[in-house]
Length: 160
Image (cartoon, rainbow, N blue to C red; front, top):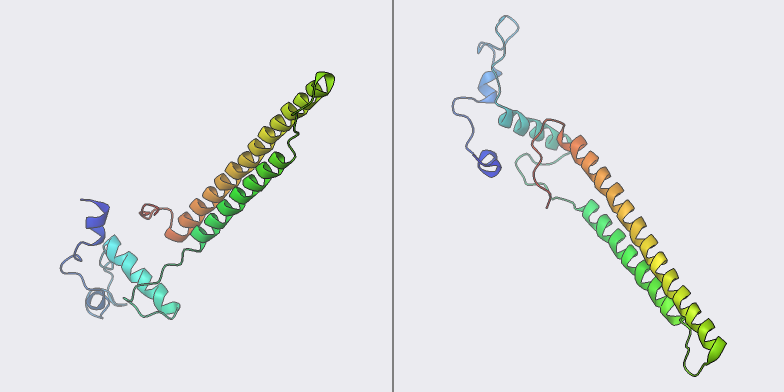
């Protein structure tokens, strides 16, 4: 059975939390019997109902998902792209022109061009290295956030 089929499968027949919690049904102070076992899916649904009622939401109403982390992640990507483009265009504007030079002046100009190209490569590599490090840190933070939110043993849906 797939994750999707388990998530949308009909509830277990014969179990109702309202009936299970009524006095005389084996779940009262006079009885020494154990409480009826609640299937994990229904237990998670009941917990979510309690959480949503504590937040002032109507139980059963779909929660609007906020994609704050997604937008933050995309903003970081845009900042790094802009930084890379600005860095490379500033190098291109300072690139020396060697047209019309001869002799030692030409050699000096060509070495300046080589140094400028090498510096641009190192600078772009440094920006990309920082970009990758920030993305890895963000991925770890997101993973920890999901684990804390969903619980260690809960089934985590695939990231979208």
